Image (cartoon, rainbow, N blue to C red; front, side, top):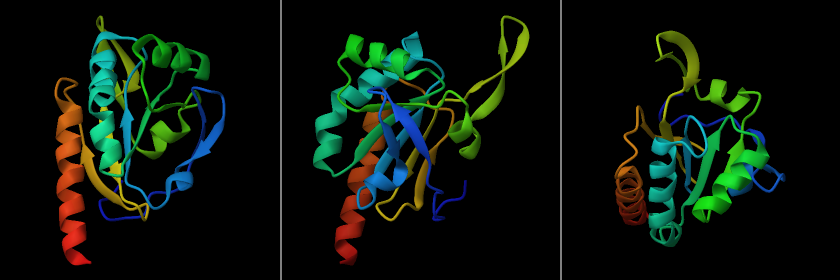
Length: 160
């Protein structure tokens, strides 16, 4: 993934078991946050952070999409349990995780496993990659993303 390059379109199942593509959100900035697993401590902190800033992100024109390797059913349970107001995407076959290169070797209880590295991508209204937040710390991350979107909006409006 390279900044200012067009992001290839992808299609996944949502938490409502509907099909959605990145191109469905053309014209709006998209916040695509990858997290390791639904309903685990760090992922819950991150997801709830986006929930708590959702109205401000929405007011800034942004679309929030959470993505993990969980099934649509598991995503739906996670969304309902924490009242998440945005769409969760199920990348069960890891196709989009591979596209965004977020699968990394991790050490789990002394064993090496491939897991999702918590990463957020901000994609512009024209589907170009605006920013990458690698190795995200869940606490306070949504506010960090909101600040970036608001700055981008200010700069973008000045150019018009």
